[in-house]
Image 1: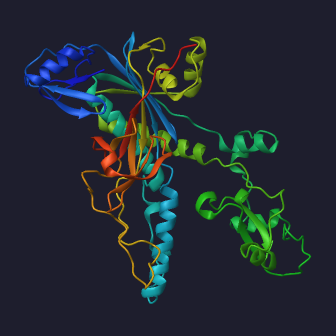
Image 2: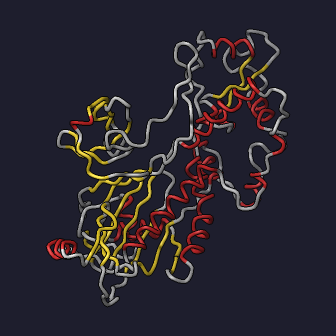
Length: 425
């Protein structure tokens, strides 16, 4: 499928007449403006007659489905994998900054009480903000290569307290009971966790007779957070032994269910649709739909469950025939602003963390051909040996010479790979 825009950048209907496309490019009547997906721009005036195209978006916290369809055909379908490493990278940055300030600027006053970002209207966490921006980027990009007239977005709303009650086997909440959470009447999370554990060490049950109690994260705070179901009460003795590797938590102490994805969808629900309507304005109509409607459409048409199929059902044309394969897209990091590596070399020398932007004609995330396979450059060395991986991040080769690689195209921060069609059951 070749996507076409007119002389003024307005999208037209795509074409499968590849021979005509080659002749247009050869004679200078069209120029290539994008290779993935392959898009050309005409250099002569053409009529603007187009069909009605609807874009369905299956929004999510980890995977997003896109499907641009007409009544009979699916013109573009893709599954987008979002980044999930932002929280960990922010935590590492906080560790480095705190360590550096303690070493070099201990005279500075604490900045904790000066931060007002969370009190600003419309403030979003960096991880949530990045995922919403990725949704909007691809919606705009698809609307820039196809004459989309309507964008339909599925946004989900989760009852987290109801889900927690169902998991714990307690009665479902009703009415004002939602205002009475488990921490009602407690000053903070620590006070609630101590009360829940009966002010007793969960490991030794008070046998150590230590009067100091600590809050221990079952999963690291970087990944598990400060939720009550991730905290357990330990005495100071057991806490020191545990972190020293001389003690193991009992098998019955496990981290409770995490509702991070459900919370993200609840936050993203209104923010995404509000920003989308602000960007599209009056050009493209934006509609909001819900998951139960998508499920009903998918079941009634006998379709399999996937993000792309859900997006096709959201677009309102579930029986549209896929004229080409779908795209698998993975969002990767754009910038690395770390100047030096965290670990020092022998002799106290700090090495630079970044390689030059281009080595032997190759850049990071470039699409290359390695041994007959299409791979991406995931790591570079000044010696000209690179590590390559597939679209899912699986390592294909740890160290291979650039002489054995053939660069297909430069990439920036979106890795794309064409895949086959989904089979209709």
